[in-house]
Every structure is written in C-alpha cells, then in structure tokens.
Length: 161
View 1 (tube, rainbow, N blue to C red):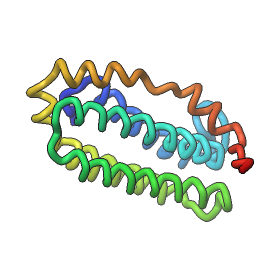
View 2: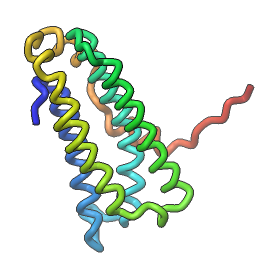
View 3: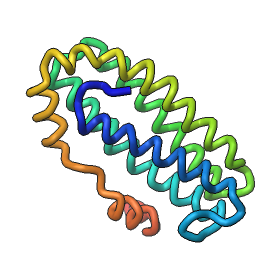
View 4: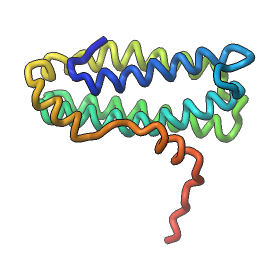
C-alpha cells in the first residue's frame, strides 16, 4: 500500500485508523468511552481536517515530482472532500440519518479505490524522485489531531459582510 513517500504513507494510515475507530463503534461500549454518536462525530470532524491536510500535501508532492495527471487527481480529491463535507452536514442535521455502516463503507471504498488504485498511479513518479518528494512532503508539516479536534469543536464564524 506504500506510495513511496513515508509521510504520505503515514497519512494513509490515519485513514486506516479512522476505519478502525468506526469499526470499534459497532460495540455497545466503545473503547475509551463514548457513544457511537460521539465516535462518528469525532471521525467525521477529523476526516474533514484530514482531507484538507493530506490532499494538500499529496498534491504538493505530485507537483514537486512533475506528476502529469495532477489535475485529474486534484479533481478526485475535490470530489472526495465534497462527499466528506456532505456526510458531516447530514450527520450534523440528523445523526440518525447516517448509519455507521454507511460511514464505514465510504471509508473502505476510499481506501480501496482512491489509495490502492489512484494513489498507486503516482508511485513511480515519486520513487524516481525521492528527494523532491521528501522535501515537498516535509515542507507541508504534520497533521495535528489536536488542532483538528479544536477546530471541529469551535462554531463556524459567519461572514459579517
């Protein structure tokens, strides 16, 4: 499942961790406490921040390596981000409208379709230019779970204009 750049691979493991969290929510007592609602709320909020961060890093790496299908890949990222936001909005409006199995299916499809198929398409380009890929990925920083949780807990500010 490696795309050849350790930071991107670590980012992909975040998605696997989120899948595991949703899977653990099937149990009546969720590890670490909380309810299914709490787990889904946390996973969806983290997922929004994660998509923005990871897709930005991934696109920066692809650009640094001269990946020829960057625009197509960026379009896929925009579609996935829109799906995540739509899920989160539906959940916020009515948590019961989003079955846990739907979130799990969405995440598993993302893993199998986007990462295992589409991300593998840029692997050779990254592997031919490991220094450029590493520099671009490192320059983007690391995903901050604490900041993602804080942002998710703060209400959105309305535009005053």
